[in-house]
Image (cartoon, rainbow, N blue to C red; front, side, top):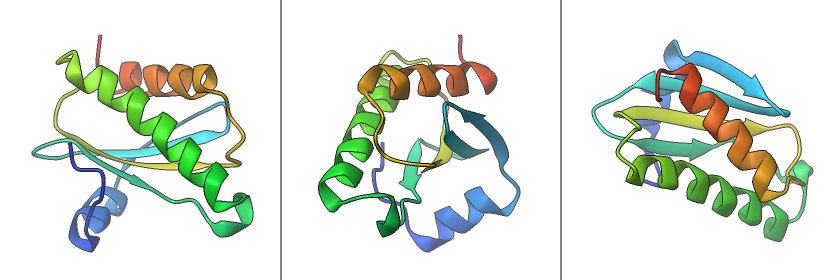
Length: 104
């Protein structure tokens, strides 16, 4: 799983993505050759510590689904409305997104 994506992959994902949103967290995803994860988190959403905490929790939730072998090659860009989410809320949103793209 690539935690940082380059401009080419980001453009591929955002060109014509599938949108999903739950609990004020939006997911833009598109089929790719492997799993890519990116974030759009502006500075105005909070301090660097809280933004990094959100990204760490989101990475863990997505990687746990990926490690179980259920997540296919997909590129996803996550864009929250704010960053003050607990892990259970983030995990619930990620699991719902995964189900929406066909993961059991």
